[in-house]
Amino acid sequence: MKISELNKTLNISKDTIRYYEKIGLISPVILNNRRDYNQQVAERLRSIQILKKAQFSLNEIKVFIDLDEKLDSLEKIMEMSDEDFRMINNLIDKKLNDITKIKNEIEIAEKVLEKMNEKMGGIK
Image 1 (cartoon, rainbow, N blue to C red):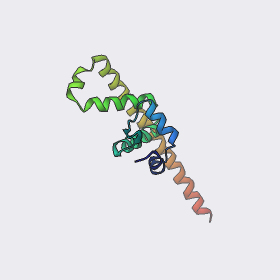
Image 2: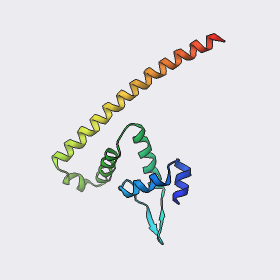
Image 3: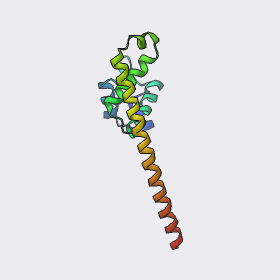
Image 4: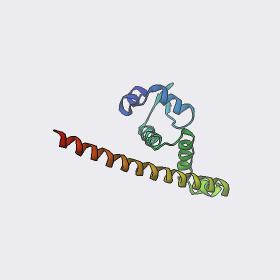
């Protein structure tokens, strides 16, 4: 798939797609000097969008993408240092806590909006 198709399908600017490629978040296949963005790249871009909405930095996203690739190979997992393993576990715990806080804030905002909606419905 061409970059213009990704742009339209996922609503991500071409510049952003190129930047993600430059920093190693995605890797298109190069065919005849043209980039081909396959389904795997599109899925990764969707994941990046979701993680960004969950307030992950691009550096944190890169760590998780690299980890995900390592987790595909038991051999690579075994090569991981204890320090890296602890760092990744700590990062996962921190992000899970951050997401829980965001979920709680959204639930509070939802209740406030529901009350406002009820009041607005009673006016007319």
